[in-house]
Image (cartoon, rainbow over all chains, first blue to last red; front, side, top):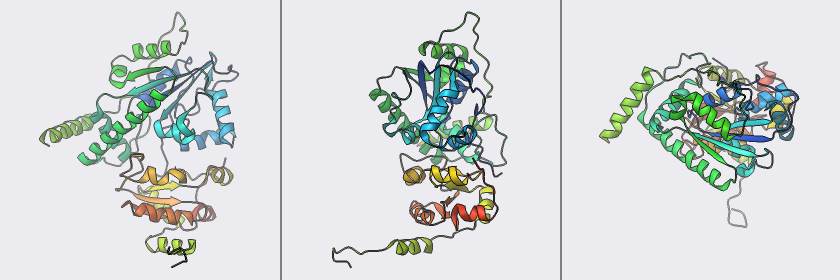
Length: 245
Length: 132
């Protein structure tokens, strides 16, 4: 299938008209397969937390540039903030480490995004994260919203080990960035998020100083869990092999 | 040997040397390979993509970070792209820079090559382009 199928959830929905300039901005500092899409999906669906997504992914930027009829990076950021700030003045993006640093030298967005906050999401179980990552890269299926492909994922302990090493390196890079930033940080762990989506989302929204209406309820996610028996098989096999080593 | 004691080569020498090691593909073959699982990587600049259009299915990687994202041994790699189990096909604007870059990627033990004539040949062949 000759389509990119990069995961573009909430690509063009959740666009706001006439919102005030952002009074609060946030970056969801993420790693692949960390639950960041799930978190951003629910945050966007609240309509109170902007519409965080991977706006600094190179392919996604091309899509938006085309849709918004902008050319320069400065125009892109201006349109992004205007269209993705919710009416209560909250603007958010999600970024993997290199997406942020490729777009902004030094990764400093505090001048651009006012009252910056960071939500740093990680996954405690790196083996599961790496297994999920390996399957996604092999099949190019990153989300339950994408159709299953004919490509069969092939187990490779070396690939999983390499991805675990990569994940740990990315986490070190994020930690260094967060330590150098003066913006407040909320740490979210994937396993806590999936155990209590509502509680975690409310915790994030309170951290972002978002006023919750009295009748507020957390919307249900629109993404499904992708892990299945193959994930369980690979995780068990990798752990068993790891023990033998 | 030049007067400075350094062997001097010109860009044409570099290009010839790079292409000697590449099994270059036509735009049509690049498209077919991408349909078959190869990674088609567009290294044109943002302004070139904005001016001439985007290639559906291509992964955009900025030229200045290409080696770091594609080297499977690099700590700054993109694991979705730095893969020795996929053919990597680079596309630049006219198929020159992509040859030099592909030759570098081959030194990472990647199955890398580039598109003859680059994007301009892709477009001239009537292959899909998304205009802004």
